Amino acid sequence: MKGYVREVWPQGHPDLPEPGIGVLLVNLGTPAATDYWSVRRYLSEFLSDRRVIELSPWLWQPILQGIILTVRPGKSGRAYDAIWDRETNESPLRRITREQNDALAGRLGEKYPSVQVRWAMRYGVPSLKSEIGSLIESGCRRILLLPLYPQYSAATTATACDEAFRVLMKQRWQASLRVTPPYHDDPAYISALVASLQGMLESLSWEPEVVLASFHGLPRECLEKGDPYHCHCQKTGRLLREALGWSEDRLRVTFQSRFGPKAWLQPYSDDTVKQLAGEGIKRLAILSPGFAADCLETLEEVAIGLKETFLAAGGEEFCYVPCLNTRDDHMDFLEGLIERELSGWL
Ligand SMILES: C=CC1=C(C)c2cc3[nH]c(cc4nc(cc5[nH]c(cc1n2)c(C)c5CCC(=O)O)C(CCC(=O)O)=C4C)c(C)c3C=C
Ligand SMILES: [Fe+2]
Ligand SMILES: [Fe+2]
Image (cartoon, rainbow, N blue to C red):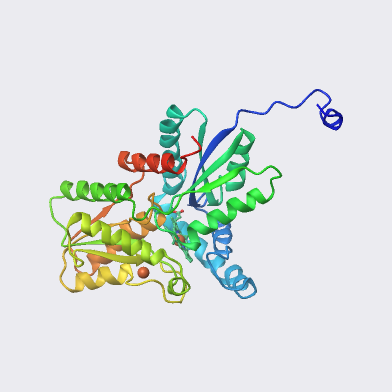
């Protein structure tokens, strides 16, 4: 050892753990509980993100803190209450993301002892900061980030990447970071969607006249500014339709969860449901190919809310097709995606 190195480490160079590889699943985030303050804390962090609300904070923060965060946490808290997992005391999004992590950790850990799989949320806990920190602490010099959004948008995928890089900004010895690309058109993902839809349809005693592929919306101006989300959703819809051999009337792409007064991507799911019932459609099914895990937006807004809307408008049969969640074909797909994106590292 050189003289100055011996000065820094008189006992000799410290032992370093065997370099490992970390895989970090990331989803959006969810409140820790359904009470006003827990939901307010979550919404405040989420809606203060400038990738989500692109207004100047000087304009937006007074509206957010003064109006939205006084009213919305109560309303959203009641919606979370309707779907909360009382057994594990967490939201479905959190439980399912955790279970996806456990399934992938089991599969990959068996094959590749140097790979560790973790999960994090962009908003709330477990944070990207804590999980990237603990991967590095346990010796991972390479990290693969897997944003659990099939379709890319700046409001979801990009902000997860921003946060991961912000965490690395504080590291002297940064880990190498890779990010999985969006998988909206991956044949194995489309096949898993088709299998889950067909499985559900076979279990019904009736056949839907129309199926909606309902995606989370985005302000229309995001599309005008170049966000590919709309195109990714349309492509998922088209590939699904082609795989099923269905017409554009039978499988329709719609957008839900509009937030605020501006125009969002259209057609809106709720308007479409009312319109279809008005046209005499009696049997409807909806799936949510834009969500890797069931959450408030699918279980409360679609499975409960859009069902009520459809039946109140004259519909007779309604079916919600759950997200891919921890289905084996979804886990097979994600395992394959991870292995492909780790090539050269394994
Ligand atoms: C799947 C992709 C998603 C996009 C795109 C997206 C954009 C987006 N969302 C909001 C506002 C809200 N979204 C909320 C919940 C929520 N959003 C997504 C996913 C996307 N959002 C998920 C998975 C969830 C559910 C979280 C859960 O805990 O289950 C909420 C909070 C709930 C509520 O109060 O309604 C808001 C608000 C905006 C503004 C936006 C794009 C600009
Ligand atoms: Fe959202
Ligand atoms: Fe498009």
